[in-house]
Image 1 (cartoon, helix red, strand yellow):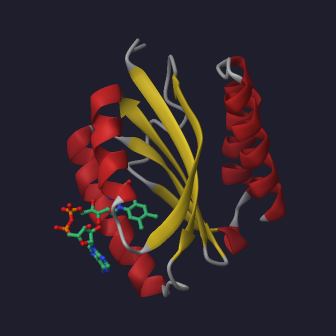
Image 2: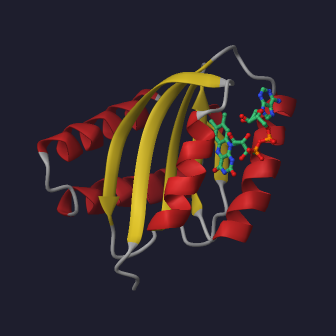
Length: 142
Ligand code: FAD
């Protein structure tokens, strides 16, 4: 339990379609930095869209999010969820990644759990809308 734990989910558009090599480069840097910063989460990439969940200590998430927002490899960022959260949903993942065509049952299960748990934490109208977006996006990738 950590009362200052924060979770952000955003949806963005890749500036151009990314190759596997480019995606792996993003992931390598993300995992190194996130391990150092105590940030965990999940990155999905599908047909030119990213959906990323970042969670960790609030100041650490702020720092990573600000850095990621400046990245020219994506744009049109929609912050879909930003709230305090009592616990991590993906504690073991410095940045879990799936090219979503290959979503496995385990990941689907984790995402389903996220969607089920998250509404309890979304107190604002915006939060609920964000969760519906997460849900539709995830469903669209099946
Ligand atoms: P530097 O490596 O010093 O780069 C300077 C600038 O160039 C930065 O704005 C950087 O974003 C940009 N840049 C770097 N490489 C390229 C490239 N190949 N093409 C174009 N521009 C480039 N980082 C994390 O630490 N944690 C994350 O969870 C995370 N998630 C990401 C999710 C997405 C969808 C994307 C696109 C990037 C993500 N990144 C993440 C990478 C992040 O945006 C930074 O590139 C990285 O953290 C290094 O930051 P830096 O300030 O040290 O940049």
